[in-house]
Every structure is written in structure tokens, then in C-alpha cells.
Image (cartoon, rainbow, N blue to C red; front, side, top):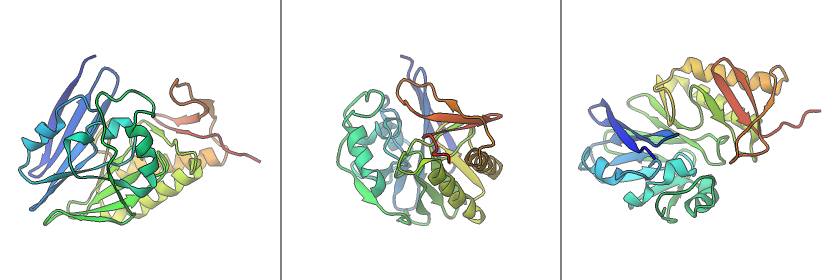
Length: 251
């Protein structure tokens, strides 16, 4: 397996860390304030993420997982302070125990603190606000970097194929989350997803929302989603964008 990472400095106090293996790449984002720092997601668990982060900041670092899936939590053991949305605590217990899809390369601690929608992290001169945006998972969140006007979206949206896997919410719930993100549009300029092209503009978010609208209205051809780990889902595409979701109950 080919494993590697790169670090890209986005500004004086913000870094994008990309961890890759032979089939998957995932971004973690380190956001530093005057007093502390937050790492958004901890990746695939194949690298010394704690050591890499310590080489970038001397501030105490806590990790905030945008959701519970293994490619976002596998490096959690490198950090003593860990957070996730309360709605994803059950999923975290499952995925951290190795019962989710795909193997974990090393043990993931089960201890984590649940946070609510609207939770604020004060880093000292830098404010992060949490928004619950279920769809990819029951407790997926986006994190607004208030002063820098940037939104970190995890797997909720991006350019490419979006996986709206949360059966509890389905495509209608994902569409509501996208509307919430759009309604926040006056508070951010760019979004930073966990996979694929970064950053992305609001035009991609608008196109994803329109795609969801047209799927719900029956205007887009649905196909079976072929994946050995995720069975029973369907998908629909327009140009380079796609959404994977539980089958809709159509009357």
C-alpha cells in the first residue's frame, strides 16, 4: 500500500494536511488561534498525525470530527481531547470499534465528547461555530471559521460524488442540510471539503442543491449504486456532480 501525506499552508495560522493511501485521499485542517488550535478530522490513521501537527503549532490541539466514518477518525488516538456531534456518538462507537466499513490501521479511542448544534470553540482571536448538517451521517457537521469567513464541510458537500448515506434522513434530509448551508452564505466566501478539489465556491453548492431538487421531483434518472461496502443505495448524476442516497418512497 502506498501511503503518504502533504502539508499545505493556507494562511499564517491554517494548514491543510492531506493523507493518502492507494485508493483514497482525505484532508484534515489545522486551525490555530492565540490560545489553542483545532484539528478538523484525523484522517486514515496511517501517519504520525500528532507529530506532524506538533511540528506546525505549539498550542494545545483538540480534534473535532466532522462525522464518525473511519477515514475521518482513525488518527484520533494522537489527541487527548476529541469532539463529535452528539447525533454521531452512536455511529462513532460503531466505527471506532472497527464495525464500520473498511479496516482501521490502529486502535481508535472510544472516549469522545459530544457537542451540540451551535457549539462554539473560542481559540483566542478565532471563533469556530458548529452547524449540524445531517445527510452523509446522522451527525455530520460543518464548521464556520467566523473571522476568516470559511466553511469546513467534511463530507457534506464537494465537487464530485456526495454520499448522502444517512437512512434516518434520506435525500430530503440532505436537501434540508444543503439549504441550511446556503442560508449561511452571507457568513462565508469559500468552503473546504474533506475530499477532492479544494476550495470550492457557492456555485457548486447551488448545483448540488438543484440536483437534489430535481431528483426529488423525479426529473433525473436513478441508477443502482454499485459498491461492496454500501448496498441498497441508488445514485443520480449531472455532469461531474452526483448524489448517492437511500431509495425514495415514490407515490
